[in-house]
Image (cartoon, rainbow, N blue to C red; front, side, top):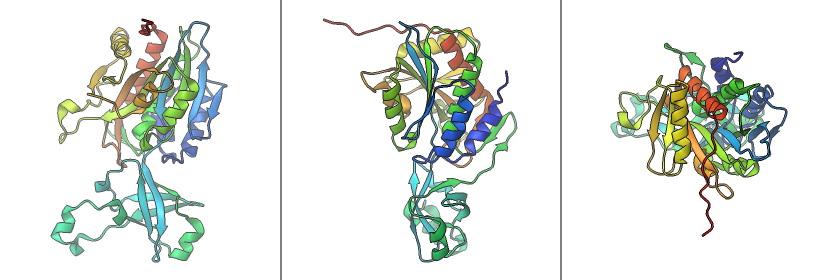
Length: 351
């Protein structure tokens, strides 16, 4: 199979795609989708969608979905001393902001660092506190007049991180949430290429998930699938976490089970994983999932939804870490679900 999961992930993660400014990431994803579809749409809202196979009469339409935006920051003000004041786009972990390297996406890309007071000048109380976002400032090495020529309030800021290969086929980089999900969907399409399967198939890479699943609402309404499988990331176990609340990296796809998800889809995903010998684990949630599956599920007259997640460590930080094998397991599970597709029972009854 001519598909390199690691290189695809690298290409996508190194793109800029802060919520509301996903163009660069969307363009890269659309280029990758051209291998599988001649019907690709980059919509006005920043989503990428593609028709892979139109359903034959009587066949249901299955949607494979992942969000393409990433967390980042937005410039709110340029101070007299040239420092940039910022606000967050998405749920940034403020504990990790100080002294990070960043890229400011203005009229040109500018390198910067987040300012940090030397600990020698801090009081004991200041050392214990996580700074509020209003206290954060970005140093780009310019005075205000120079900065204003290249930067304007509203410009986005991303973390400037390298794609680091770790041991045991693991990698660390920004934006694995959720370019890892996008990569898994593309991997599934590669396995489905030139295959026959008993359903229609579309793909959605949605925008602005980190701002409240906004792209999923619009894309889901436009596509109107019968069944949707969302792919996102979830918590990979670390020694300081509660073990039963986390997935295990290297142990495969996390199949979601929640009141907001369709249980028949979850059961079918489990059965397919067993039949195809795909490593999997369960993710139990007590209510909503905090993913696009929640929004797509209540789109239009309702969509039967499932969720498959990739366990990652250090979510919403510049060093998100994933096992490549887990992305592959999710992609294989999506492909096998489509290849072995079985209709879901209808519950609408006139009384």
